[in-house]
Length: 97
Image (cartoon, rainbow, N blue to C red; front, side):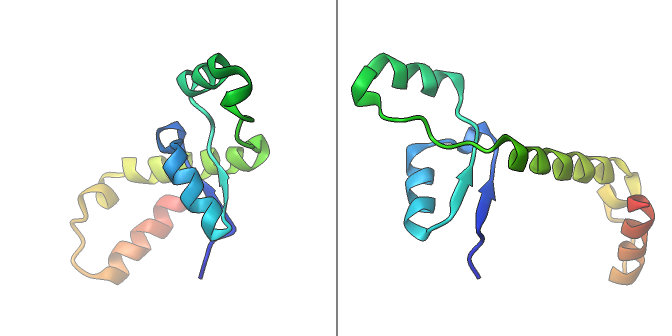
């Protein structure tokens, strides 16, 4: 199953990654780092257009990432002391509440 959209941070903003996603028909929502934007502007007409970026979709990524980071702060989940998967999943549900 192919995803419709890939949300990533600035570290994944390379030409190779964007072209690979484009070949597969996947929309990339990746902000462009300032150094890449400056290089593109320095090239002038040869620099091409800036890559498309949807701020509203990127905000969803930020929300999910904050939630995951908050869950990882809980010591029981971070250390994975629970032996059985059901106990671990119950702890995950408790932390999510």
